[in-house]
Image (cartoon, rainbow, N blue to C red):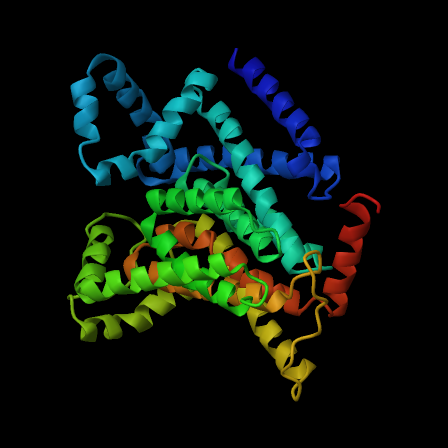
Length: 420
């Protein structure tokens, strides 16, 4: 029965992908869309198998799946125990993925592979939203836009029932909404949807939301002549509120507490990371190790699991692209610091520069924060995965005029998109 149900849901998802205007407006051919979705689902199914075989305790995926049965039983038969499991905000936020798993189980009849398929569809919609944002912000560069689907670590960690998939989906919708508002399409309902997306991101991972704030503020500020004044004011007020909140806290002590939550966990891929002692001096002493871990670990051969080698190679290739983009940028116009002229108007293409700076600020802040808190190679790979596209995209776009990238973009424009 589960096989027939999987086939049925696959057909329903495929039909929706071919018919939904939001997806069709990406311009991608239906067969390519179906191939991308199939790759997403198959990667999720493979992730379930890999987690069962190689991850300690079969990993968080299976743990959430099993706990969903226990929480469902308590919700139906022992409501006091269910309330005890959700007695604090920490419990409520931590259990968010279990609630989602409980809902998925209703439609899958308690079968994880079907849960993975059903979970993949909304995440794929978020991927489409991010793809459309990249297509507008990095014009005439489909290769850069397609990295939102095809970057291996992103695909691996967002294709299963995990927080990374939810965060990546919400981030896609948030950035598409912000892009539309900054491109002359300010609407109150769009602002409300963006606020809801951001609050949900904060619910699932507050640290991830905090790394978004300075990047969004810089993006809005750089596009201030085009950005709606209310959006600039909201971004500024939020930045001031967060700054005041940090000033009211003992920042080194707060960071030390967050790090300790990870430090006390057990794992097989622990890396060297000095413990924060609650002082500015210890924070500055830890930054070099945090930068090494967040930006470069696991190095090839490190981590203790064969699968980490693939992520090490991916990270190495990413940094090579970053280096080549830096060289290309320096060599292109060494005496011209002006940006190319971009036509003005509500329907004109947006300049890549403000969004590129957003991407780099967001990725560098997030990766450094991950390295500061997380002492395990496997967890670093997972947490860092949704930052990597934003490190890679502006650098890959800087290489768009080179012959290999130009040829790939020409091929993608010809075969992956509708004819205009």
